[in-house]
Length: 412
Image 1 (cartoon, rainbow, N blue to C red):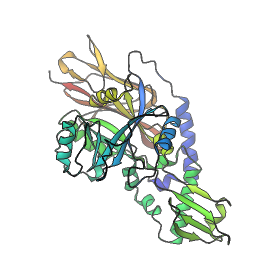
Image 2: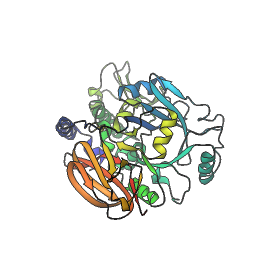
Image 3: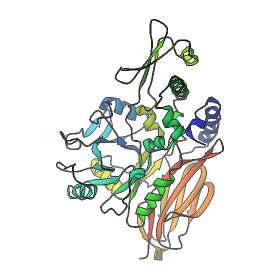
Image 4: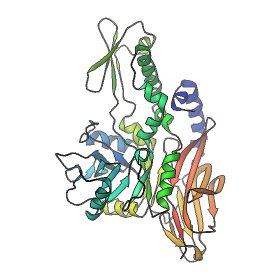
C-alpha cells in the first residue's frame, strides 16, 4: 500500500481507531538508573538554507509543542558564511539549538573553527574529525560509496527520502494540468483535516536505509539517527478572486495557477481562502524523533551520547516511545545500548517497551529472535551488533515504531 492509498478519509478513520486502541495500552515503565529520555531533531533547515524560510522562533515553538528538547540545525553549506561557525548556538525558548551543516550527503556537527565545504566527501569527513566534530551519513538513497572512514553515525530514516520514494504522491505534488491541481488540493484538504496523522502516509519500513546501516555496522560502531529533514517549504495559498475563481499562490505569493469557481474542488474551499503547509515544523517534529539518553542536556552531553550510540529512533506519531529501554546485564554488571560487552561474560540482552509490539532482534542485520510483547530477553550465542526493531500493526500494515541502536557483543 502506498501513500495515496492511505490518504483517504476511510483509511485515516480506521487508522485513527487503531491508534486509539494502541495509545490506550501505553504505559511508561519505571526505569531506575537509566538516563533521561530527551527527544531531539537532528536534521532541520532554517532561513540560512536556500530552500527554507523558517525562523528560529518558529522552529523553537514547534519544538516546545512537540516535546522536542534539542534541535540540531543542518543548513546547506554556503560559500559566503560558515553555517556552523556563524549559526545560532544556545537556547531559544528553552530549546537547545546546535548549529550544523548538510553537504555532500553528510550532516556535520560540533566542529571548532571554520570548514572548507568545497572538499570532496572523504576529505570533508577527515576535516570534520580534525576539527573535533562528528559526521553522519545522510540521504543513503543517493550514496554509492560505503567504504568511508571516520563516520560517527548515519540516518536510518529520512522523511524527505520517504516522500521521494512515494512516486504517485510525488506526482500529485507536481501538478501540470487542472485535474492534477484539483487532485493536489483534494489531497491537501485530507491532510489538513487529519493534522496528527497526515504525514503518517509516508511512514514505511526503511529497508534500504537499514540495510546500509547494517553494512556500516559490520565495520565499526555507527550510531543510527532519524532525519526529520524539516524545511517547512511546501506552502500553497488558495485565495478567492472577485470573480469567484480561485487563485493558487506559492509560499512567496507568486500566482502559479487559477481554478474556475465551477470546479468541484473549488466549492469545498473556505470562502475566505486557506493556506496549506503540510510539512510545517510541528508536523515534522511530531512524526519522528531521535531519543537521546542523557542526564546533562549540554553540548558535551550530546557529543558523548551520540558518540556512544545511546539513542534510539522513535516514530512518535503512532504512540509515545518514552520509557523504552534496551540494555544488557551480566552476573557482575550491566549497561545500555551502544556498549561493548564480551561474549565470555554471558550477557543477557533485555528490552522493555511502553506497549506491546511486534519485536524483532537482529544480529548484523539478520533476525535472531521475534516476539509480540512489551518485553524481550535474549542470550547472544555469538559476537555481533544486536539491535531491536519494533512494529505496530495499523489497518493491517506493519508500521515502524522504534529502532534501537545496537549492543555490541565482542569476542573478548
